[in-house]
Figure 1 (spheres, rainbow, N blue to C red):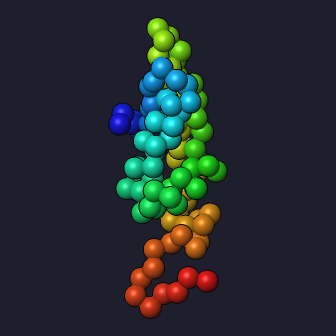
Figure 2: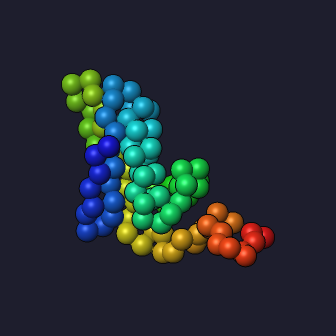
Length: 96
């Protein structure tokens, strides 16, 4: 999945004949960097993405639609900032 880091944040891209499918591909692509950088599983990353990731139309040309997902730098300041109950447990930790 194509991705890029810019001065303002991380970008992932989705391209498809359907705008909805292009958006889904771009969002799906963002879940990997969120997991790699912050340790979230895919379900947690998707829940958090609904708050911090923007979807923007990149192109609509020649029957192909493009969407890019944007995760701004600083949108997630620490693991489990928005969802403390999603944090990874270490030995002896309990989740409230």
